[in-house]
Structures are given as structure tokens and as C-alpha cells.
Length: 194
Image (cartoon, rainbow, N blue to C red; front, top):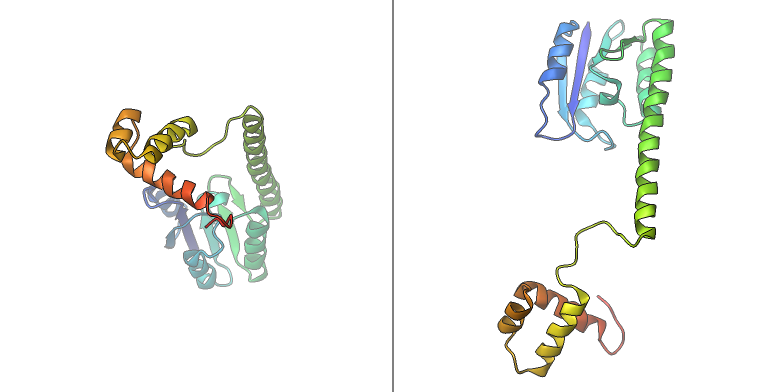
């Protein structure tokens, strides 16, 4: 029996493409899941792994639908092989019921992991380069330090209402109070920060 497994990473993605490919490849039963590939626990993956029996073939649309990493992918496929269950990937045309299919699984999986590692390395190098140029990721500050310094001076002068200070400087009152609270925590006598 051919058993399919389909997975998407987020609920706004659709399983239709994978489902159609698995049905066309002759799957009689298909297990579906919405889960990030990197998460350790994927309950719907456990279901087809427990369901398949000696002589069955587990079919996925692409290799990356099954394994979190090359090590995990090979572990799952080796476990299936030990149980006498085949594995097939439709897109990569890998069928582990043949010696050539087993070889290509390892080669393709290695290239997939190499690609992920190269992307990760390029991303990290880009972040380091940006930091060296003084650019940092994340959300920009709600109030520039100079603007907060002016607002704080007006606030501590106790002559201008907070609403007026915020209107004059073009900042949100809520943001001002949040920055003020953080500033007051930093100025505690014992140097404690919460």
C-alpha cells in the first residue's frame, strides 16, 4: 500500500498541490499536517510512520516535507527500511526500494542541507556586515534619544502638560510614559534594573 504524508508550515498555506501529487502517485491514504519543519514534535508525521506496514511505501511530495534536517530525514528513512517499508519522494523521483534510490536520497539530502547552511551563513554574514556599518535589525525606536531628552526636560520643568509636550514633539503619549518609566527604573538609587 502507498501511504502519503503532506505538510505545510503555516495555516495560510494550502495542501492541495501536495495532495494532488500524492493521489496521482497512487496513495490510498494520506496524512496531512500543518507544522513548522524545524519543530521537534510533529504528531501527524508519527501517524503515517506507525500506520505503514511491511511492504508499504511512504510517499511525500518533496524531501523537505519529511525531515527537519538531513540527519532526521536519513533516520526516518533508515527506520522505514529496517521495517521493510519503502520511501518515495515525488518531485526528486527518489525511490528507496532500489539501491540507486537510496544513493540519490543521501546525495540529494546532502545538497539540501548544504543549501540551507549556505543561506544561514549568508544571512549571518549580512547581519555582521550591517552591524559593522552601524545598522541593526529590529523595530526602530519610537522616540529618538534627543527627542526624549527634550521631552524629559520639559516634563521635569513641570510647566508644560504631558499632552502638550507630546503634541509639540510629535510623539505618542503612551510611548513617552513607557520611556519615562524605563528612565526612572534606570535611575533607581541602588542601580537595580527590572
